[in-house]
Length: 199
Image 1: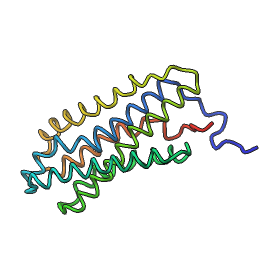
Image 2: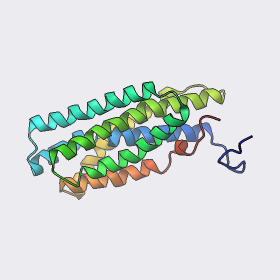
Image 3: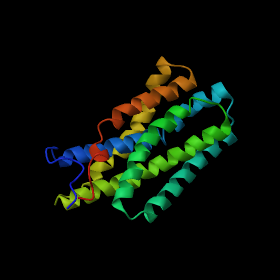
Image 4: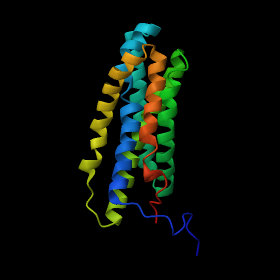
């Protein structure tokens, strides 16, 4: 019989930890990777000359990334791959947020916004499914209403974050990098990355 990767000395996670991990994942992948674009858009347009048509196009590309991510997750049956894709989405949420500061080339922005949309799908669909499945296997109530606090919290974090950060850093690129640094606060706590959902 194959020995589990994690030793038996690893303390089992509690329901509140898994729920907190899911909430943090939603703040990171939805609030920052997807919705931070909206409050940062005025500075982006003023300082880089991004016009309204291009700004709308980037938003549409982000939604397209979410749709593609939703289709991929619907096709993905193996819980191991769903877990890997979710973990990759957390990393990509940080990287794509930081990458927005590295260039003013519109195709590059389009790529980062598309990948940000994929991250949103991983957090919303995969993260929620993993948390729900774990709770049900543990004989607990599937408290998705509590989990989805992460959606509203993510929007609040992105809005308040942009307001505070714009008072500290006026340059648009610094604001994107600051948001990526802020994302580390929500990247570190989630225990979903180390939890074996297929046990």
